[in-house]
Length: 403
Image 1: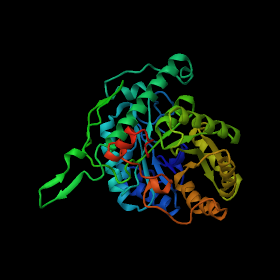
Image 2: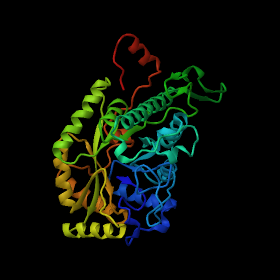
Image 3: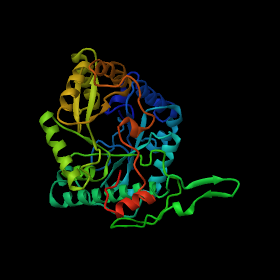
Image 4: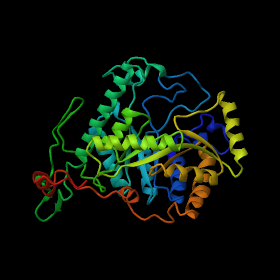
């Protein structure tokens, strides 16, 4: 489940039950995540950014009829973590302007607070107004149509290369404490074994980070890393660095082509033997009557002043029809799906109380949580620490790492 404000439609906040006055309260978010957990979902993602939301993809706007402002995604996840038991919590972080050292300890802390249910969604930005908040770099003003020419592609590639380095630094910092580095021996007065804390000594084009982290290795060892990808350059980032990639196929044939391209990128990065989940993203408007779902979206479009479209497929219909759609797309090789409720106040419960039971009846969804960590829910083993003597010895002998 992808959570953003009152829903993904820009007029969702005007719907009955949207609760816009509660949007900046902890209770609002706790209630949404609790409902998602009642539906036995794997995890929720929390959207975030470094500038006010905008109807333009590359610059701010002056609209006052849409939600503007949001709470920090990592802090929301940390707040709701003690109130939940099973569901994964995956905040969004903008790697372009956020130091990997800060992110590593924030997500490691979230993993401790949630007892092993933390993840991370990495995104990049080239918006000049967001860069201006930090004053360390500038970006040219690019329109949407400027993204495909060589200059736009080169900037995208650079930002994604930087994101790959960001993820690598974060992962090394998570490993910079061995699992048994903390001794906590009151009798001898030794709290930590200093030999089991490691300098990561990362030197790259974008970052120079020595380490170690200030936070011990997280309960999962490596919290789950994810990224949204729409094209070849982002597919390479997913193939190179992520545990989960969110993709936006238009239809089954396109889904099959996207899966093939990401798998090729994964192989090119030398990760063919590692698990990598690909989740299809869909924006959903669900009702018992397909006409009602279509009419509801049309009414919201009227309030917004334009027909709502998205980077992902926009689905209107019944939970049963959505189940048909998901199972059809799954045959193209997708691992699962990340659903974006058009109106959270309505469509969240349609997903948890109607869609999930429908999929369960078809043998395509769980009837109970089967693991206590997010990696466990996703079938991902807890990875060995790259700095542990055992793994270092196996690498010296030419054995592949167990990650």
